Image (tube, rainbow, N blue to C red):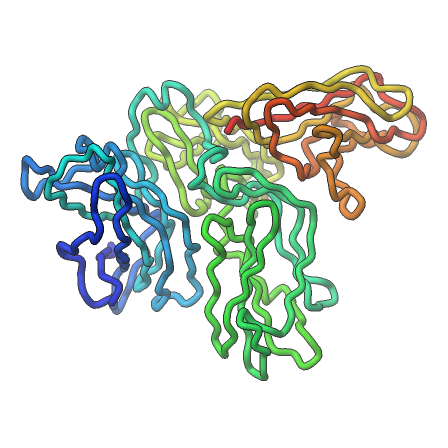
Length: 503
């Protein structure tokens, strides 16, 4: 098993009663930088999986006894931590993004994911006691928990709702929700392309259509590449736009960290080329991308379950990286998450492995591969469905509208349905929705993501397409229109459902 140790920022001095400068009631202390090392200097370093950092407080009534709850600094969340850097001596391919400040204390921890052996995460810690905090000689001890996938929470939390946590409204959460794959041009040129998709940034949902990003021969300091040199660029999801962060050039350049709170979409290596950049598939690295919400993807007879967090059965379950599960051939498998956060597979939906198990996925296989994946995830927190429906107008146009009466909603999914195919031998029924008269598909002229159902479709509902408008506020009016019909005529009725998460 790996050994995890805390060092000061010189990477030589182990942590031992380091003073906290500026600690005073009613204000933030100065930050202290700490380095968490995994198997530092070991000849056979081992990784630590699913790491999260906690902070304990010494009980003033019992010297040497540290508690994770039941003392004011823990229950009132005096401690705050953030990631500010890393050391990847043991694995030069590994990186970890910087984060914003997050509270740590009772039931609150800072997630780090898997840390390779002989690598370190650089963190800063600070404290903010409330004005009423008693003047005592407090001592704090950071800790790191690994290879665990759940923690207890007060029973009332899961009694109020269980399921996958979307992260909407949680300013500490970020991740890829759907799409956003990186691809090069064909033939190779100086651009990398990002597919349409949705991401979570500091608790808010953002979306974009496909975009192109040019990467020239100048690094992050505007220094031109020369023979044998290259630089890495990080693409990440910012507050509504894709951020490109260039690193510094070199013969073996380091990867740059994306801005704090932005989910990584991938790294691109740009090498010296006399005639300009040429980016190929081999120059893309998406190994550190973290998808969210326990997404399921097939790989032969395996499925890969992404990172995610969920509530159920008195525990907060968490995975900061992906999990690979192998399925039996020619069967239907049901993928459950247990109270421990681990996964279990059954071949009968009635065979629930434990009372608080959460069913996430139903997967069908043939002799050699996955053939179908059915989503059974449910979500914790408040879901609001805004439904607009009516008879399809004779000519494409207005169907229905409504006024939003919730303070803040994020549109998580758009469902478009028709009662029938209409008629004709070509074309589709196309839907479109608007917020205060502005289309949700603002870039449709370059990448039309509006939902559509073909004249010969056998399934009369779709969840495809990426709407760029995601935020709805009280008083706004959402309207629904049809934009096109099949060649022979319209369907009888049309329906649009906006599945929203309350922030």
